[in-house]
Length: 110
Image (cartoon, rainbow, N blue to C red; front, side, top):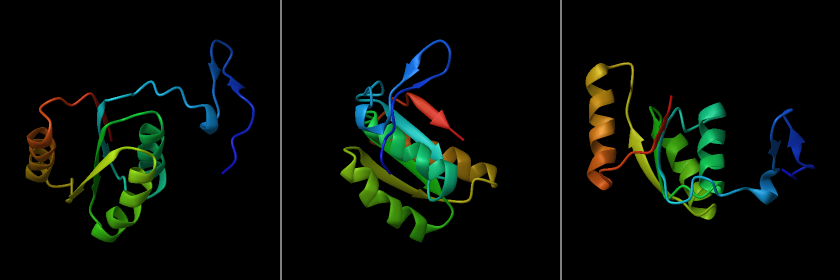
């Protein structure tokens, strides 16, 4: 998708994709629903803005497998967490698995 001119939200100018600010450089980001739709696009944008580790959570492994190479190409390390977050125990396990990779979690998007 080609980036258009910068967008103004009235207060700040937001750069298009080709001019990403890298404001999440080196950050660890946990994204649920990362296999498709808003979750996937959110993960892609965090990767493009410099995230180091992206913990991608989805209940369908094939979706995670499809998004992982895209995240790598954008420069982040994808960590695939295949689980159903409608079960509370799975929520805790997913976060524990992420923290086992790096004990610092900077951003969580659900």
